[in-house]
Length: 117
Length: 115
Image (cartoon, rainbow over all chains, first blue to last red; front, side, top):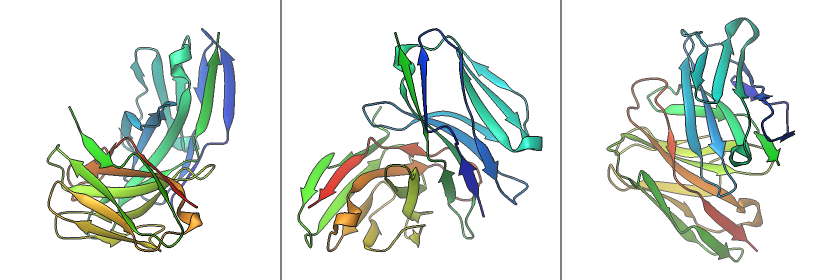
């Protein structure tokens, strides 16, 4: 069965610090997809990134970067020079297919990031 | 720029009352989903609809029913609300049910309290 573990329940940093959010996953599928979503205090879920299991290249988007390592089943998310606006709950999620179609997301329990001045 | 729209945003129900959460997407997506979010448990899938005319149970379907009204709309009904159904409900959609790994886009959430 699929499982996503985000062991860090809450992280507090001071603005401009770098912070890494950990995500460890379990799956028996050879083809799978990993996602990160952001949930700011307003409550909506914002898609950040999707990565498939065949692409282990790290990705950088502005201050955000993602490190995917199949050998350790991890898909970690780093924010460089954090800002107060980065304060949110961040969810890691894993996807495979149900028989008959549809895409199921298995979510981790989320990491609450607080960035203080 | 609407994406996934769900209503109502907030609702308080008494135990035993019924209600329907409405959801519509304007991205021409085939698949739609209902998730619930509870503290410390992440999001869990209630029901999904891989394509118009089909619905299937997710991880936590008990106490809920769904209707895929057309390609755009997917509603979630609580027939007899219970306090355990106090949660934040998210509707979501994705492009193609036949291809793995489609990005799932979420609505803004509906906060439901059952007293």
